[in-house]
Image 1 (cartoon, rainbow, N blue to C red):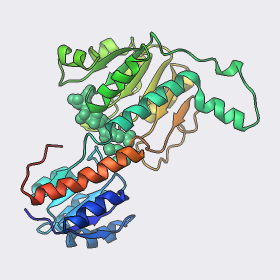
Image 2 (image 1 turned 90 degrees about the vertical axis):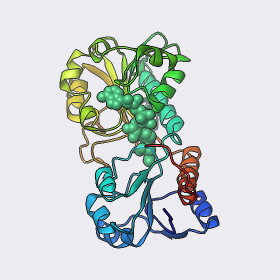
Image 3 (image 1 turned 120 degrees about the horizontal axis):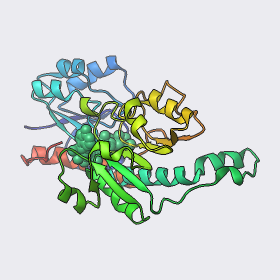
Length: 313
Ligand code: NAD
Ligand code: MLT
């Protein structure tokens, strides 16, 4: 397979352009395209590179069939790409799965610590000219239990960091056995064992049919009173409406979300909830991670032209 022309359709760091230019690729840099524009530009290129904003749908893949050879994702999740349609048309989908794990894990830990000490809420009152000390009594995380659902790259990095704070890390992952999880610092349990034990539950699974609404009303009912829920994975893994009900009833004490069912979000009740802290999908938004994803996605295209085999998604 030979790639000559590359469309960069989302904001990707300059290093990507530099590597591709040095290796003789022809580049079109056109971001924030409408669906109509993508239907016109994607079929004119051998490869298209995206982050999470641009959706590479079945319709676009069908329009580009015959010419398009590679869809590159500068990041982890490929849920903005119709992978099935790509496979049907022989289009290779590749991502950079390790490049932003550390940044996403760090944000998760920051959110857990912020929840435990009401950092965001306290800061908002300071900016409003108030001095409220009694209202923001916190809790140490030391000795408390965090449940990690999905003990892959990011889940493992989260465990490693939270153990340093003295937290007990329990977790669930269908592909791991107890020994493999223990090597990652996680005590593997069933979901039914996890719900009543966890003070914090953080999800690090892909969004697939079996993980949609993984934390919903039913699961929340089984949780410890005062549980806190963190989602830095994908919107839809935690049911936002059910969680707001749990926050209102006092069943859940806090929530921290970086990702939403719709982005930008239309449902505002979770975001506006006083017990919730939210960020606009910033998990991978560090200079370090963006430099790595830009470099890796470009190097992957160079490797394809050199006939080298890439790792799986
Ligand atoms: P990974 O593939 O390394 O790990 C995911 C783990 O989830 C795997 O071990 C898998 O076995 C497990 N899993 C699958 N189904 C499960 C289920 N039903 N219950 C429990 N575990 C299950 O993925 P990763 O790189 O750690 O990424 C995790 C998530 O984080 C993905 O959704 C990814 O898109 C997202 N992500 C978000 C950001 C961000 O900016 N917020 C950044 C990077 C990644
Ligand atoms: C990812 O899956 O890598 C993240 O959603 C981060 C991103 O690309 O913005």
